[in-house]
Amino acid sequence: MTQLETNYRRALRSYPRVWRQQNESVILGTLLDVAEAEERTAPRAMELMHLVVSGMLTRFGLWLTTRTRDWIATTALGIGAAMSVGLVLSGTWMPWSRVLGPYTGRYIPEANPLLDFGIIIYTLWILGFIASLIPGQWKTGRAFMIVALVAPLVFAVINRPTHLYGPNDRTLVFFTIMAALVLLGTPRQKKVGYVASAAGVGIVFLWLANAKPAIGYIDDRRFWDALVSPDKLAIAIAIAAVAAVYLNVRYRTPRQIILILLIPWITVCGASFYLDDPMNGVRFAIAVAAGLILTESVYRGLIDTESGYFGRNRIGA
Amino acid sequence: MLRRVEYAVVMATQDMREPTFLILAALANGKKHGYALIGEADELSGGRVKLKVGTLYAALDRLQAEGAVASAGEEVVDGRHRRYYELTDHGVAVLGDEVARMEQNLEQAKARLRMRPVPPVAVRLS
Image (cartoon, rainbow over the protein chains, first blue to last red):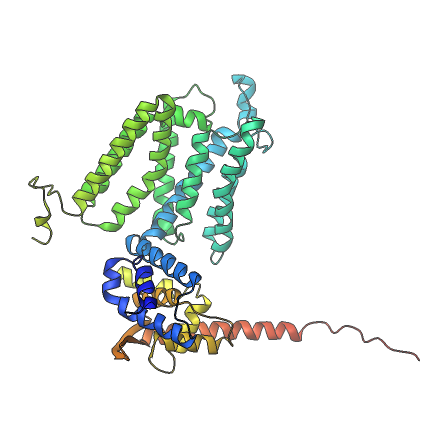
């Protein structure tokens, strides 16, 4: 084996083992053909780097198929847009508060980015959602979502010294992760994904509105503090995770969609616990790690949920 | 399973990128192996697109999953493994649709160029 071949084989280790078993000799043959045509006896650094990146992307593609990523993108965009509409109408901008304001004597939110930059983030999400509904306009929608990914980080940095009024840090983190999830794929399954997302978020807001009728308006702080407080959120995450594992243990796609969509909620929940008490944050992180190990063990057949048997022998039995 | 295949077909008909188009076009006149595909893509694009090996096999994986390309035998030449690829009937249809779409765009662009107002010709008096 020449040094050139050894170097290529080393770079090809970034590809998944299953993929290599089927394709390594073929891709290696092509790489050696190209090197010979270019009269090279050593690989180019950029060539090796590209191979490593391609291998990592292949791993990611095998783990999360395009269809799964598109489902995640659709659902995340639906949830994010519905939450944006909810937060705009219930906290950032309330057209009806001008009518109610004189009676309640409460603060009247205005749609002014200089007073509350949250309106910019929420508008980006709503525009991204609208673009996804127009055939052939997802490139524009993706551009909105890229800005929606970066904007919370920019605002968080600006907000530190200036102390402008804006969304809570939990909201900024939540919408950043959600934007990253949208950018994982292309929202294609619009009917089911959007209806389910809007229904889910609608239920949450109705619940919150009924639970707190005296609030007058619900900004994002109240949203996280009142309804989605760490303890309630932790319970909801646990229920969703258990549902993902036990209801969909045979189906890879729904299980992955549910578990990945839990990431922003888990992050916000963990951060809330940590800010409350760092030890609580650590306990929560341990609980999440244990849950993930348990989830993977059940899915890979290491734990037989029917007999409680533990071991690898069950696979294929 | 059927839904996955349908999904792959829908995916294949959307947003075809240039490397994908060049690979399909390179396979239009017969089966080819990886290195030959890189050379064909280079030639078809007039030397503009140099397919990287990682990009080529990622595209071939995707096109196989979409049912546009199929493996067409393997051989060992000078100790190097070569796998041949060919267009499937679906791949021929996808390429045909893309060519028709590009032709339509081309005609539209040409028509607009023909409609371009002619700038007034300056008349020299002396």
